[in-house]
Image 1: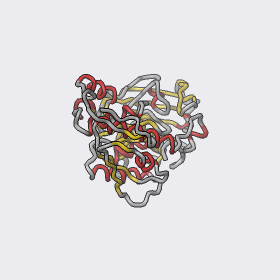
Image 2 (image 1 turned 90 degrees about the horizontal axis):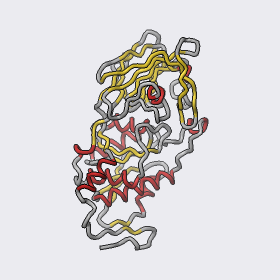
Image 3 (image 1 turned 45 degrees about the horizontal axis):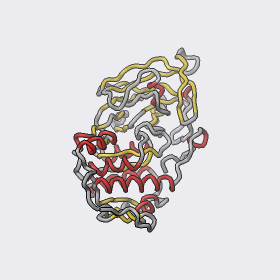
Image 4 (image 1 turned 45 degrees about the vertical axis):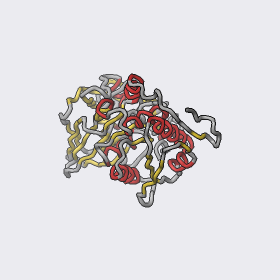
Length: 337
């Protein structure tokens, strides 16, 4: 369901079709197979994306296996169950198609996962644009053990939140305290409703909440700190900041303060308001209720695609490979020895 919500309609983003995702996934699987992976696990989805991507692949030595996660209902729990099933089956690396919200679900279900995120969501700060073929190759090199995981992957930063009832939630990019908003809404935020933003990555070349901080105080994925902003209504004394809050959609937020957050140092999110996690509005804070938010580097391990392929080149892992056969649409024109 990633990349299909109303934010893509009221902004200027294009919807990511099932056929587009199928083609991305197929290229990624071929890249992983060429890198040395032999076993691919998948789960059923409403649009048969994974099934159709794999059903016509004819690559020697490669097997595919469907994991049963029960009935799928196009809810976040589908993703969590799929990730847990792959964890239990011993997957060495996950190819994750989606945006920030999808990767958040992966982090919730399997904090120690090793992932290559492929950008097909609405907000795509966490999954960086990369050709699926080489993204799959990086995943395959790690999953097959040809490139050691600890040489090419580090744990990502997360924003963690503890609510008054003691529960903990997380986001991979942003947590936002909103006033005058509604739980479950998928419309773009009205920046006038933003009161506080906590960012794990604050990037000026992103869209969404991340550039609100990125255009003032950048923090990249490799930086060991987060960023916090305080915002006001238009008449509240904040400085107007023009930022792309959604693809093709610029709006003005009024920023009163921006500051660096050291890892593990918490700040307070005070109600009344609504807490948003990577685009999903979920937790209501009543007047007087207070949540604590902080940034930690304790999320899934994200494979550095460029670094992985560079090491593969330096170590000659694609040299002298011998036979490779990939039957494309029934035409046997890619076999060689």
